[in-house]
Length: 258
Ligand code: SF4
Image (tube, rainbow, N blue to C red; front, side, top):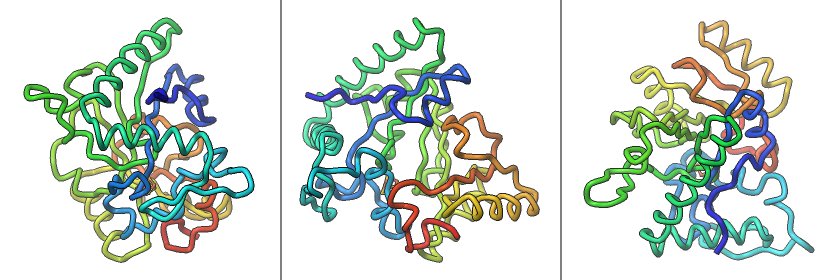
């Protein structure tokens, strides 16, 4: 069985090491690709086709081979097959999945400490699960309660998650999209109601400069989302501007802003 957590395996989390943090990320199959929809807002937010799931090596397959899924198809490569195996375990044997996750988290925390780094964790690398509602057992309401000193963070497209109090050690950044007016309005409302930070994915460097300047004019605290991935360091109510990667650079749904 493949490991669940990837540790400092992408360029952005490696940047976090320079700031003293070590990042573990859980990558599952997004949207309906694993048979159960792990991204309930992906359709309305228009992000399923532009998901980072197929960025980098995850998007490359020999002779363009694909695996047919309930969400359409994914490239047939070892990265997607590992995500498929993890997702199957999450959906079909939750107890085994959680016990494996806890074992790997314990080892990751020890590894980070040996290196003198602060361990931080993203459980939704390529999914949008409401982890605060995933019970560990009858007495433990979620994984955050088991690790009160461990910082978790994620991006989300589920604005209603901000309506409930989140665990103190779980930082969420809302992900904006203009794929539908209803979704865009729900993001702006959550931002106004709960002072949350919001990430905006823009087409290219020109759009990034323009959008950043426009946001600054409105008085927003603008953060360069490409500098590192440690969103829990951002001031509350920030606008995080991120350049599109992989298939997202060709997005026409409204998820990527021009
Ligand atoms: S919600 Fe996030 S993980 Fe899910 S399809 Fe959209 S971008 Fe990908």
